[in-house]
Length: 353
Image: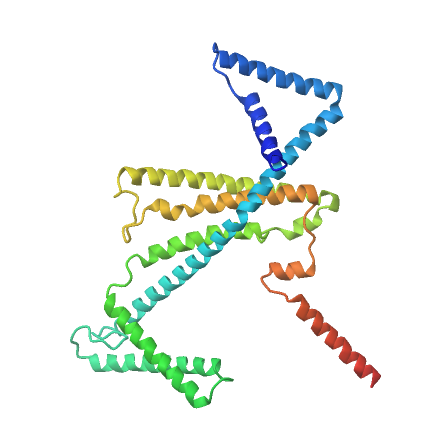
């Protein structure tokens, strides 16, 4: 029974708002009944505020507040699995963008010619040229330099695990494997990865807007700290509400514009699958641009929730640990306390000695 109370409060509030704002069609029985309901609700509200204004105000505000808290609980339950989806999308987008950009740059550089000769940096003869010998020497020098760098990096990473000779040998193996992979990659894809730049930009779009939603959830969005500190303490809740509320409205407006653009692209693509499709890869525009309204809409909802929380309960206090956490540094409080206790014990022992 108690589980039905939040749903009942929400239904009552929605029904009251719909009855007050509905525009009935004239000369119908339903319209006459609806007009009577509207006038009855208005009369009840007016009589309540005239006869017992304080109690009526408390009932109205309490009903709205409880309904809003019910909605907040629903969003909080939905937010937990959605945050897992966001993190997965951000991680996959970052991996895809990094891999595509790296492979594209690698292909462009290692498949490029050495000067004007017919030899590329992998040492492959592209066409006959009298300067082939000099070009091959340059390509060999490049790979010797890269091999030395890979061997040094391997030796540095494995310094405390195995001996010096095996470390250098393992680095040489890594260099040979890297050369083989580069050569196979260039041979299999002589014209580079089709649509690598387009796919990288699409992954960047998902990474940016879904990352913005994650930042809004963790309160890691940009803020002007100097202005906030100049506001008196008693006005901090109102200032936080206005700031976060404006951010939520702006994100919602941009999400609405993004949704209109996505709908326009989808409508044209649905009418003809040859329209609104990238030239390099057969991917419709709307699948990539969908990240804009989704990410910004989620960010707007989260900012609105933070705004109401700060107005009711006050903004969260800034402490040293929170500042370190917001800066991206992971603080192990237990290890820090143990280290401080050890320092204090050493000082006590030195004082006794």
